[in-house]
Length: 635
Image 1 (cartoon, one colour):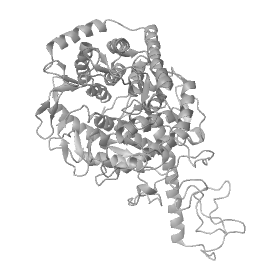
Image 2 (cartoon, rainbow, N blue to C red; image 1 turned 30 degrees about the vertical axis):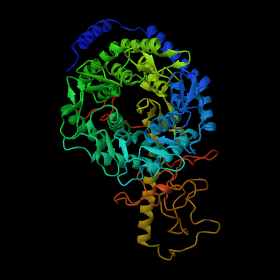
Image 3 (cartoon, rainbow, N blue to C red; image 1 turned 45 degrees about the vertical axis):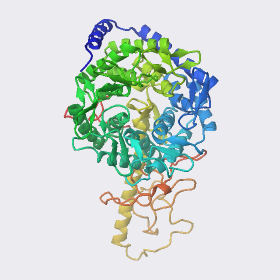
């Protein structure tokens, strides 16, 4: 069903582009051009649009679009660090802490706020060490940007308080969900939270976020059709599909993306198995000649033979699963459309080989460049560098204005629209830069910053930033090692608490030695909750004259109260009860209601006590991820 002329043109282009090999000097020169593009857009926003959400490049002013967060500044924050500008990264991080307030009477998209605001703040928090910011004790398990991300995410939680656990699409940041809010939302709006919410839960110890994201994913999973597909829009109350078109593009795309990336970041087989089952149905019903069409979710019949620009993420996602042959062929189809117009129209009719009426725009989207970055990383083929250079020149030639870069209203005549979305700085420029910087620290190299890794966690015993970054759907990198670091502290304390609790129960069952009272008072001046004397093992029995029912040392036994200034949920992993840990063999049945959830993120001036056990290096399982590739067989 492909347009033959486009295919022939692209084959010729590939053969011509493949002949060129980029030198290190040429790649460095392209990176400088990309930096210049970023700063023209970034400075135009600061000069003409801040503190509004977005720049209007044709009129040189600003507008609020997604909630009045100074959104472009949040979205661009980690891009500053990616480009190596530590000074501006530090300045903007401090500025955001002083100016951004989420306690406002504003309606916000739950989906967009999560991927742009929560994701952007989490990424900047995890990169704060590399960016030279002053770090709180215990970072990355605490910090001001983490608290901001948590505050923003907590404003979204009321949207998840539905019978199914699927969230509403919009929430008022001050009052919650409006009684008149529509229950219809897109599939991606239900299934695109696990990366950010699990990161929050693993860093802070508050299980609420990850539990909400998982409940939404599992509820959505149960609504798939008999042939294994999901539609485009669903009523979250009745669980009826309102739009029954199944595909991989707009309204669905990031749901599939988060199943794969969530499986990698969290080492989660449940998420991977969900995606693999979906993928079998997608390949069986929607794939035609390396294009992916839209089909009716129950019958599998074609409903829309179109390619949408948002689908261009798919080859990159396939590369993460090791499906390179299919990814390369699909990418070739998509890039033939770019070459035809100098950008990707929102909708492209595959049978007609042309744009679809009223869907001719190109809002500076990143998805094709994103896939080029992944495929270059996977293959080393310099063809993708040539395609990246072509994209850079197209954007410069067609969309540059005196006040930034403008969306393309119509790719046929390159008429411009008065909008520069924040993802242009967060995604498009970032992926373009990373495409031409294979030694960047986000790829596991050490070209940027002072080293290829850094220490973090309590006592600085966690290895962070050494690779394994996972990009959320807004291109905000999340360090999987940080999640392991913070959750491992909780696991170590919990294991030690279980040992001590079990030992205490055993000694109580055996009874006191002859002549010793079980309720004997402690020696004068010694508290009943006092820990063992220096040098004494934390698991050995009590010394003579000391009560058998003495509490274990502070910070180890869950039944004791919190220390001053310390939250009651400290070091509890996702899914853990806030009260008392059950023995390892006992099933967990109790958890805190969302309204009682608290964070363990430290407040300014607070300090954490040193952990009883060390924080090990992240064990990144080869089964799920090796150099960015995911393997599901015995290899």
